[in-house]
Image (cartoon, rainbow, N blue to C red):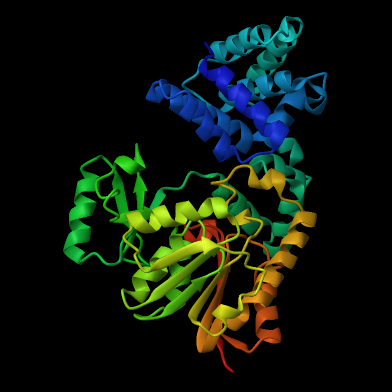
Length: 434
């Protein structure tokens, strides 16, 4: 039988090989091993996600003590030492002896007994040096320091230092590493008394709730043990949605009876909030390129009782003549680099690159070009992303206003985690003027 560390090792090897979504990998591991205790599942999730999140720092620490550079190690050995190092540095509940000895045992179990001594020696060296300030020696190389300290590729650090300055860039990177509370967005169709009753039941489950000062139906929640087990979840009284996307939908000014078109809708959070704003007399058309994601939109809409949503697959970059001048509000939450949600999606920073962003900018432009005519004269278009990058954000907003018959009526707004206690999120609202 595979133990918890072996399951983590297999997940990390799969991630390195496929560069698949880490969230998908950890879900598959936990689903296949549902007989594990809650404590074991928590250990697996913490170690797997932690190694991915801190990989740049872990590799730097290992390279300081190893005669063989990390990138030249066998994949199994490399990930075993990363796992051991993460436990030594970040998991106080794990004794150093256990972190080291279990890594050595696992090397032998995987048929690499000849390298078990190498694993042992390197982890003991890491343990011996773990209280030292490894970052001090990097202070003269600002970009390298930020990259290692916050485990973010140098090109992203360089980009943000250039755009925000040294201090702001470091605060931003630090915020993305911190664990933020879950954001619960309550159904806006609830009365105040109904919402208060639901809040009380959730708090009775040991969850700490704090209302966001910007919107009275958004609360941060700490201490959630199982989201789907919370009172009111099955009944559609609330959903998980960051304050940033709620603010964007609020800025769009959706009214009762409006027709809303959401071109890149999955998993459906913005569509559902838009449907509540539009009411029973309104209509929301939700499209997504991936046909596999349509059932997710439909299921979320069903649970939240958003009966005025019609969801189907559709390529946002292909114009649909039947939708021309049909929308009172057009939502363009376009595919983006996702740099604003690196703290939640740990694989993003390793998959992103300047070249991929350049390709994404072209996709964003193609979606705008194909979709802008869906907006009625006097209607609104909201452009949004979950990234922090002017090429995908401010410059795209400028392009919309310059190329098409729109004027900006709200924003542009760039939300930053360290300032706004939200995802890194951008939105701008336009009104069609002819």
